[in-house]
Length: 110
Length: 111
Image (cartoon, rainbow over all chains, first blue to last red; front, side, top):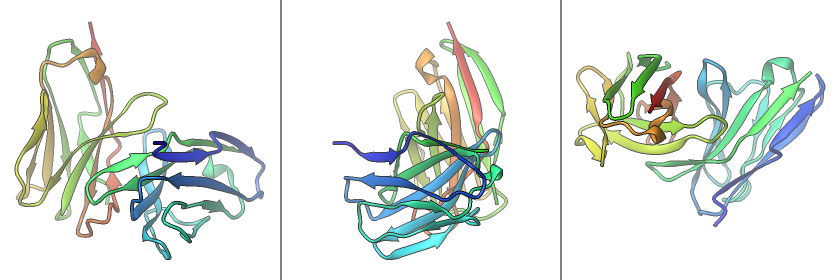
């Protein structure tokens, strides 16, 4: 049972490049979320989804897009990377009470 | 609005107790507690719902004061494995795991 799988684990981008962070879960959860974690800031919600075809914005959505075409997958797209998007990104898959986090993607934008 | 956690950091000797607080200026539907070890993903500890009872298992428990919009996490007889950063996450009214996290409390338990 893999749980929540994020790829890649590490990524370096140049300013202006685009990329997609992948997230897949095998627990058949309806709720999935993307967070970013910066030193001293805790976890901040970027986008979340309550089911296939349904997404909504969190606290810090600017510069990111998401889609949820299947229950299993919830990719996060960076449209035009900026140094301010350097962070650790966590995907979570949740029941109504508990979130299971992936191992994170450490992204550096230079 | 981000909940406020206190203290920001705690250093304990093994066997000592600690309390971590989480306060919100807004009415809350639920409070969630997570622990994160360095370089790892956050791990769920417990959830407290509005109108619910105090939760706990073994030596970690928590309470939720609805009047004050404050939750406290109690760590008793701390073990080395308790070291890490503790985050509270709050929901105002959805129940859809749309969490707003505090900035964390770093806990170090030494032998």
